[in-house]
Length: 214
Image 1 (cartoon, rainbow, N blue to C red):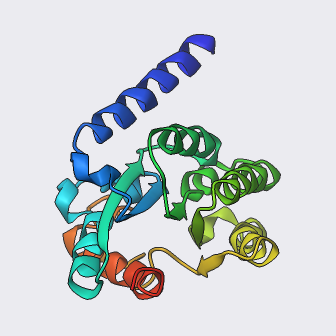
Image 2 (spheres, rainbow, N blue to C red):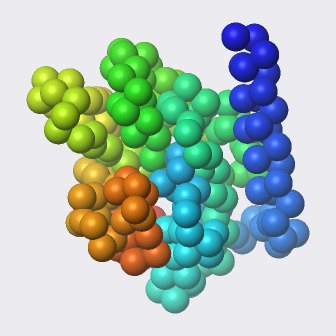
C-alpha cells in the first residue's frame, strides 16, 4: 500500500512538473489573469489533443472576448479523485498566484463509490484553502450513471449544490451539460468527451466564467 501511494505521489508530481515546463515566462506577469482548472481526466482532455481540451478552448474564447491577458493552468490528472486536489492546489499556489479556480473534481469519487462524507470534506478543504489564498472559485457539479442507485445518485449530486451554497461560491450545475450520454459527443468509452464534446463543455464553462474576466 505504501509503495502504491508513493508511486501515485511521484506520478502526480511528474505530471505537474511537466505541465509547468510548457508555461511561458510572461505567465508570471502581474498583468496576467491566471485561471486554474483543477480536475480529472475530463479536464485533462483524455483522448484528445491538449489544445482541443475544454480548458484550452476556454482560453481561446476569453482571448477573443476579454481585454485582460489570460493564462490557464490545466491541472487535470486522469483517475484522480477529490483526495489529491488539495495537494495539487497547494503545489501550484506555491509556484504562482492564481486568480480564479474551476474546481471540477468528484466524478471518480462517485464512480468508485467513495463515501460521500469523505468526498465532501476533501472538497471543503480545497475550497477553504483557495479562499485563504483569495482565489475566486467556480465549483462544477458532477453526476453519475443511474445504475448506481437513485439514493446514492441523488445524494452525490446534492453534495456539490450544498457546498456551493454553504461556502458562497459560484456554482456550475453540471460540467458535462448537453454532452453526457450523447454518443456523437463522446469517445467510444461513453464517458469522456471527444473534440466536439469539449467544444460544448468549453462554451458551458465560458458562459459562467466570462463575467469574472472582462
